[in-house]
Length: 69
Picture 1 (tube, helix red, strand yellow):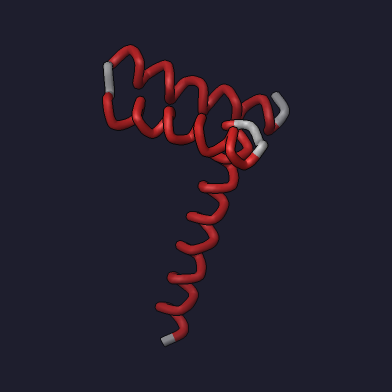
Picture 2 (cartoon, one colour):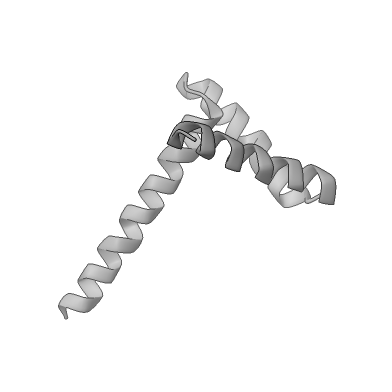
């Protein structure tokens, strides 16, 4: 399975789960993601990837700074 397909299915599964469990917080996040991705002219999946990539980069940077000291 290509990475893009896996990522899209993972995001879709997360939101399907939120709907099934009536997870208001996650459903509100999806609404925000939908609106924000439209403002930026990108897909919801591209925005999710961008957010996760930045988060991971920040975690690694903090870990590097911590280990450096």
